[in-house]
Length: 337
Image (tube, rainbow, N blue to C red):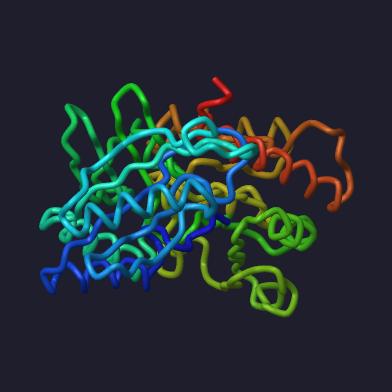
């Protein structure tokens, strides 16, 4: 789970920005866009400075923060200038640590609208993206819901803030963290859920058997739901950021689940079963009109090939595959190019 303190997902932080702007008071906002090396705060950390000398948030402390704060306070007071630059060990005079790309600008009316949109998406736990651009030297801000992003837009599956140097653009995920939906509450799921939770996945379990879909069996899950697989949309809303594991009690139920989550095109979908069962299920899905591109993207059979046999071993193989997919979505840090 990502650190949401002093970010666009921090309710109190965003609310204070909205209140200051609605009152007509100037606000200078500093944002860590990217880092290199070891830094206390990563991309997405923010600090706001006000004309009365007050400030809130942190971009990491130390000399980097002091330099950013001094310039932000001057900007809020009307005596400074916006900036977008790397604060490095050389420019800060620090003997150790890393570098931070920090942007600082005065917020305006357009930003107020974006902040309100961000607060709304966060309050509704609806995934979206807070987008900023400095193309041509001007600062532009907008908030986009996942529905407003093209199917091939990488921002739709963003799990951490991303700075793109070429386009001078920044994107920060809004709403709640992605959910790992586990459909099926049998032996494999019982072993899988605590492992997924231990490595940072938010887990929701769904099954159609009341005797198995019991919260006490899955203490590591955020929610345990019971209902017909054919009407799962009544209780869950799978998004493009989410992860899905299908491990129901039979191939017919597996296919029902896969067919119903297909329109969302989750970032990861895996289904338990043999190669033969997988081929059969994919054929049925194709006949039912499911996108072939999405069918081809399925991890089916699910899990990394570690010759797993027991539920515990299968749980580890599934978790390993999901960790790899999650890691592949993380932005490349500048020093890793």
